[in-house]
Length: 283
Length: 173
Figure 1 (cartoon, each protein chain N blue to C red):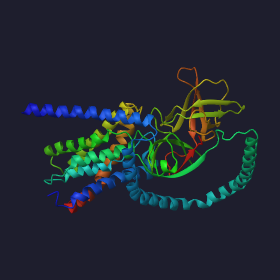
Figure 2 (cartoon, chains in turn purple, orange; figure 1 turned 90 degrees about the vertical axis):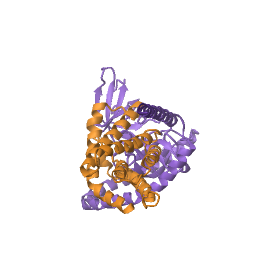
Figure 3 (cartoon, rainbow over the protein chains, first blue to last red; figure 1 turned 60 degrees about the horizontal axis):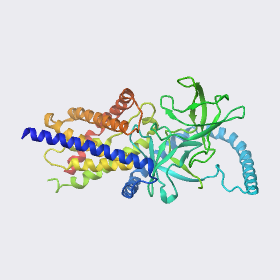
Figure 4 (cartoon, chains in turn brown, cyan; figure 1 turned 180 degrees about the vertical axis):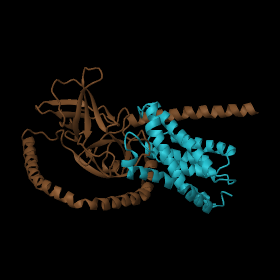
């Protein structure tokens, strides 16, 4: 009898292991291939997301009021600095408007409707963050009913922060570029060097020790220097052209000495996200 | 006993509340907790389940079932990878029950049991994430950068919340 119960326990453990791995494999496959999760999962996630708002809204509100009190202390200095910037900004804005108008007219002349730079923005609030150390993932409060589609790029503040990984009806999950899995941060980007040359490439990882994005396997002859701006190139996929990623911090030879490896300082603070913007391209 | 007490509704409500608080803590204190490379992960749900076993006495609560339910919700809502925590949480409850048979539960032995539980939760989810290529972290950096800070945070939470949670459980009984 003793032996029988031991065997039964072993069988239960093995069955659980097999079922667990099967479920994991299936859900990873669905996540990589399908544009939306199965209907039951979407429905469950929507209900859980709605209940979560009951807890998350007061908590986020409380943290917002605490941080606004601490921000009040250095308001005076900040105000003086910002006043200087505002006068410059007004000029840039007027120039920007003129250029946008001119651009539109020129596009009409050559009968070009949509180019790679066109996108509309959906702004969303972050509800919660995955409590896990390998998935840097946040849940935002806009889903497919607001027009969010899987793989759309997500921005916060001045720069790119990640991409939409899973879309439900009223909420969706965003994988941040700090996530180091196989598919999280492969954005096609381009760098314009000081000499005026354009270098194209793909982001390849994140170095958590220094908080920098890594871009590997560049085989360009043109010199990339510190401070060059990295923007998305709009090639291959739903990412529009011209989203700011960061600035080049360091350019070194790669491990085998055949190509160049870049370290990029991200444009936004990736550890503090409250409001994000999903960029929607017309397709 | 269980069917007649307030525990029947109080336990699941507390479980879901702590699940959402886990996420909110991670969001609000993300600057401190996800200060790369070292990462602290909050596991208040596990604390509620383990305290369920510690304060259960002769109540016979359906803890394994609720652990599977909350594991499924955790998988679907937070990680999106189904099949990890749905098995890990019930395993932790089962293991804690086995340990409580040998060690009589009090504050210090509870701390010891919780230490073992958190180690198992983190280690198993690490193995699962490695298996499906969700992470490329090496074993040694897992021990130093994730397991160490996570244990420190969660044991501190155990020390702070042990007596409040015991009070809640006694009130619910």
